[in-house]
Image (cartoon, rainbow, N blue to C red):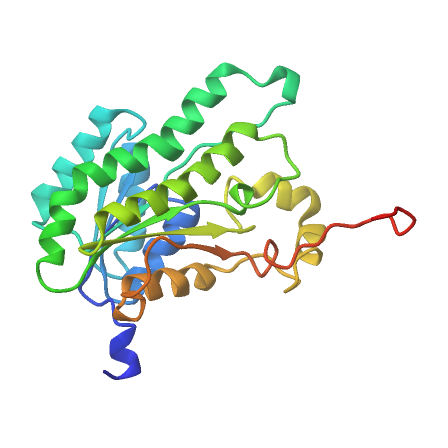
Length: 267
């Protein structure tokens, strides 16, 4: 098989949750440019309409408004996708929620919302989408599930986002658990992005973007192509022998981090 064929995702049908903005939008545009057929979800109808209109410039895109924070919303989304296609080559669980507050003020609601959207919803969607993923796998190539985690689930973040970091660590481990049970017909992997120019990161980048970039081994924040490259690899024939992995896409931030020790302290 030639190298271009190894990385070919043309014609693959991919559902991306939270695909109207941020990392989901970056992935959606990248896959459309690569020839995939992309289905995206978002909560608001107007956001779905805007994304469908803007992304249609790059290829075939279908957009759905669904509140996947609820189980019924998840069912509505999968039913809508099933009305447009009889199979899915991949599900990208990207939609998420975050919450920040000081430890003593951190509310119970922050746990219910963030763990629900970031951990329960990906599991529910995977379960509901499984028949469509298995239908794609019947063609001879494994279907894929890609869960979008975070480096906040790999290392202790500098922010007091307790439920978010816990949820991202949970989705990383859920990825491994699902991979063990859905193989060989469905491969399940996770991506743990570092800092990218998203709405969630906007305030941090505005306040100290230069410092965030300087702290990275590559001296920059992420580009959309950085995500597209890894997702394309995982969806293509080139990634067909990989499952249960968590891949940091962070410029080496977590894998090269070190702890500053007091040189006067005895071991």
